[in-house]
Image (cartoon, rainbow, N blue to C red; front, side, top):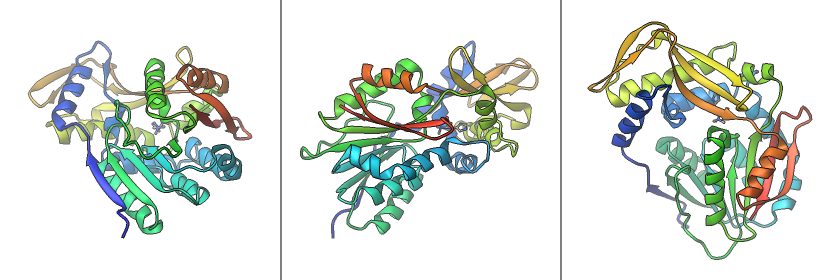
Length: 317
Ligand code: AVJ
């Protein structure tokens, strides 16, 4: 029986979370790391976001991968190992696993261990011949990949999660990915495109209020993990497009002057003051290809939907 699932637990312990959160809440403009959206409820809320009519990225990326799967396969050629940064998007990876029929190994890397192991288990049942090496880790930190025999490897990074990085972090992240790959290895990445402010802002302010619940759930997660006293009824979701920076910003705005405990630390909020919880940078096709080139990749191909909302790029080192 070929070994199918191995777990490496590389994720840092909880005390780092406390340090990161307190440091962020002590800043002039309070910030919290977007990765703390994704406790189990947050991951489920994100899945619900992807079903909302206003949130076009997920369905548009899926449609691009489906419509162009033969051309994507031709561009990539025979791949031995498919590495996925963030394994929440199993519908997308299944499409690729159906496309790359000679794939030997699939290596999902995600910080949400339960989500990771559950999706790896489901995939190992569906693809029993596939080596699945689930890695519990933070792909945005400098991780190294177990170097397999010199066979072609491709990193799959869907969903425009690259947009969560500051531009200089995105370059550092792509440069690190380029360094751990060999010449001829590939990188298949989804990137949300710049477009009208109205379309962008509606995608982060869905009428059903799921994005608001997702944003507010960060506070509930902190209460549970760090003995916090956030009262979510005293904060409101606020998301807008910062045209100068080219990014959607998500904030949680305090409705009144209030004091919040995070463990033994007291955090003051003024009425109207916000916690900046996420950036989602948007790129033009040209801007992203320039970033990729400066990171040590060359652009082999790019596919864009008819409404020019989303792009999938195939890069090679
Ligand atoms: C999963 C980070 C790509 O930035 O669009 C969705 C997360 N935030 N709605 C994004 C998100 C609010 C999403 N990413």
